[in-house]
Image (cartoon, rainbow, N blue to C red; front, top):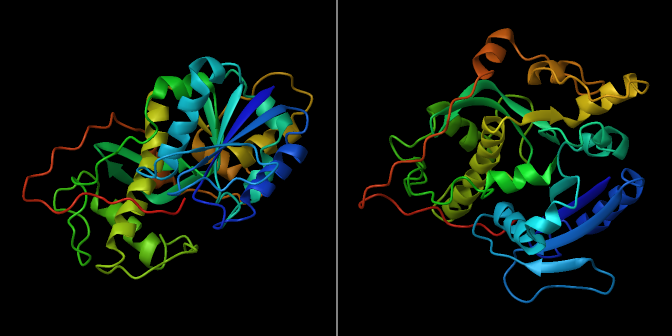
Amino acid sequence: MRILSILARHGREKYAGALADLRAFQATRLASARCDLLVVDNAPGPLAIEPGDPETIPASDADREFSAWQAGLAHVGAAGLLRYDLVHLVTSAFRVLHSRYVDRCDARALRRIVGARVAVGHVDYYDDPVELLGARSQHWLRSSFLFLPPAELLALGPLAGIRDGAPFFSGDPARPFRPGAPLSVRYQRYLVDWLTGPGTGQGTEWHSRFALTEATLPFFEAKALAIMNEHLLAIRLRERGNTLVDATWLATWVARHAWWPRRPAIPDWTEQLARRDQDAVVVAAGARQAGAGVTQPRPPAPAPASAGAPARSGRTA
């Protein structure tokens, strides 16, 4: 099994141990696989490269980690990517917040899904479905650490499904979303509460919360756009027929079916979360039914000429 890891970072200083942590993960959890590593740095200025570093290339920060990964995919090229069984998209923040699932992504588990149309990572969810660009959805894969087949990445096209924030943002920190923006009011509330408040009601708070002011509005817009692109990536993968696989559920299944030589039958995402051997969670039946389906996303309507400023890029991965 061959795996290419593409690490998106914004300079060496923030999450300074990320590269060493990723190399240690490859050496231990993926020891029986053949792993390559490409670092893509979207910080401005000269690349910070030290002796012994893996290949490192620069990238735009226009779409945060998504533009970094896009530069990495382009650098390797289609023919190069197809020599791998899986592409591992990872950010320098992969060990931040809840990260126990990371060490469940081992070679034994990943071999079970090679060749399948899946994406493997940590399934996150909201208590209630949200709408984004006309698509109704409730769950997604955390984009800081996920594995995908290279053919599906190539077929997907640009990883950032939303490049322009103008249809979404008002330019007013008191009401940061434009009236009629193509995302539900519930999703707007989740985004504001996660980035600036008490979280989304699931007992977890973001590690970098901040007050929403004129000064922090550009960062809010950039981070909110990245979160929407994370969720939209899951929506687009499902639309292409890919199944989202929770890494902890997959490791649980493999541990219990070591004798079974075939791929697992992958259950509904809510069943995956309920059957984890750690961090198991039962999603309410009503929410499960409401969030099960997904409709084709629609592109956002162009913003009127008098609308507020477009989204601005942040600088942290």
